[in-house]
Image 1 (cartoon, one colour):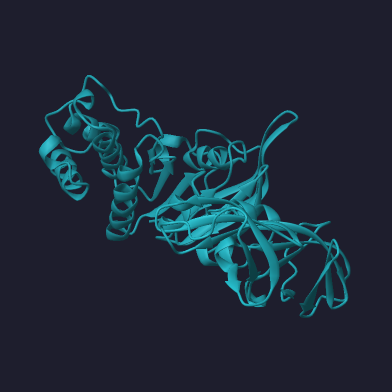
Image 2 (image 1 turned 90 degrees about the vertical axis):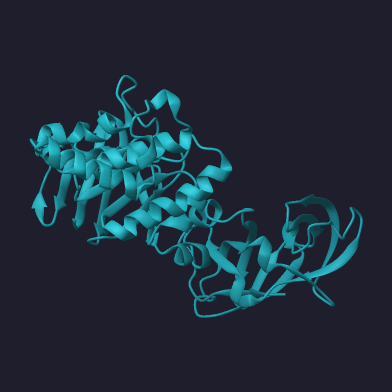
Length: 356
């Protein structure tokens, strides 16, 4: 397997900068997700790791060896593309065997390895079929087997589940994670889907506009997002972000005053208060609220309410809406669940909490 280091890597096409001076350190055998919106540079990063693109500056190292000038075919990297890119005129077995042609593996050994990988990804009964005879999930498994058969040091997954329906995505997330753990291969998943990233990866690299916003475990990014971008991008339904002003131990939101605690409250000025919908709840006392909308979401209901600090979304664990528009109630939250961001830098003010 491989340890992967990117040191001050930039990729640009003239004035268009796709990846802007990023540095990453991936451990041997780790499963990492590169997460971000379209155009953030995540696929460009993957293509540089694969050797499809050369970085404009900076170094890419596998196990300490610089690979900037190493051809893609010589990097021993397996890739699963979004489109799967299977050869339609070949059988499943022939598709899986294809990468071994370039390694001059004896036919008997190559076929044994292909059948073993097919068993691992549970397509051993499909080896005589052609891609056009397979479902989307089966094609995805064939593409994964083809990437794994050459025993890559690094496995790259470029939006591999985006063409599957919701049920298949759920099962394939678990399957890919199982296979990765069984093989111990260092894996990088590129995705815009936060659910894929948070359920599959050991760590997440969240990117925005070509730069790394935050690197951490799924819990890190959810509980302590370093910027408002990460806070808004991670979590569904999205976080409530409320404009406020910090003045000592007071958080001013319009005419409403909340209590602020923690080191850092002496740095006053414009801030944003972040409250996740699942952390807001009904209470005997708190913020006076009026329900304006309810949205059943299966096992939960998402409510929208007008409050003195603005419109808030909050969740209630019920499949049937309990509150109708116009209903009056009080809402509260625990200070430990609140997030306060400096409005100028967008960065989290660690330790600063808001209280109703």
